[in-house]
Every structure is written in structure tokens, then in C-alpha cells.
Image 1 (cartoon, rainbow, N blue to C red):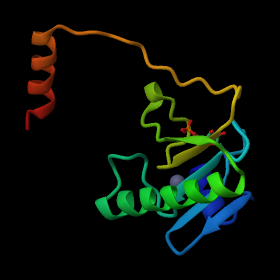
Image 2: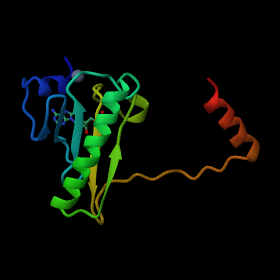
Image 3: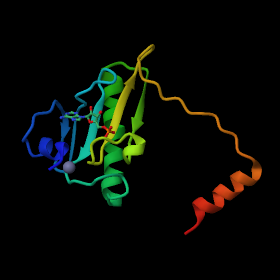
Length: 133
Ligand code: AMP
Ligand code: ZN
């Protein structure tokens, strides 16, 4: 059983922020920033692609509500919503989850995108590949 299923089942403790019949939110054990929270469906899905549409919708609606609550109550200026899928993307727990990362001036989180510029034809080729059914 995965570590988040164990938390859901009460086999290991967690600092719970929110709970309902289908979802649980708790503080990440490694507080990347103060208030770093994870939102998980109680049912085990390995990742974003495995979950059904209803679970995905409810998960993100709940993440939005909690982000608002965290923003107001911890008085943060901004936040990141993050969902890692696959080892290459940094997923370390294979139970679908969304990170809510409150952001502060001079915090130690770095999310910086490379600036890669493709040619017109490369961009067109990408559209064709992505849109392919
Ligand atoms: P990810 O890298 O997206 O799979 O995120 C997994 C997160 O789960 C990491 O940020 C871990 O710090 C966190 N984590 C792992 N075990 C626990 C635990 N027992 N309680 C709370 N958070 C945990
Ligand atoms: Zn699980």
C-alpha cells in the first residue's frame, strides 16, 4: 500500500488540513514553503492520467478552494499549484496529488522555465503531433 493510502487509512499520521468523504488535504512533511499542502483523492490513482474526469475536476476545485483559504489565512502574496506525473517529472509518491505551494518574497523555491525558441515549421509540426488522434 502506498504512503498516501496509509495516511488515508489512518495507518500513519498526517497533519490534516481538510477531509471529506472522497478527498484529504494535509501538510507536506517537507515544507518547501510555509503552508505547503498536498491534496489527494482517497481512492488510489497512480497519476493524473489514471484518474477519472470527476476525480480530476473535484480535485482541482478543492485545490482552488484550499489555495484561496491558505492565501487568506496565511496572508501569502501568491502560490503555485503543482502536479508531478512520472519519475522524470519529479513524482516520488505514486498516488495522485496536487501540491499547493504558498509563495513568499525570497523563499527558496525555484520554478524557472527555459526560453527555447522553435522555428515556424517546428511549431507547426508540434501542433500536428499534439493534435494527432
Ligand atoms: P511528488 O514529488 O510530487 O511525488 O510529491 C510527494 C510529496 O509527498 C513530497 O513533497 C514529500 O515531501 C511528501 N510526502 C512524502 N511522504 C509524506 C508523508 N508521510 N506525509 C506528508 N507528506 C509526505
Ligand atoms: Zn495510494
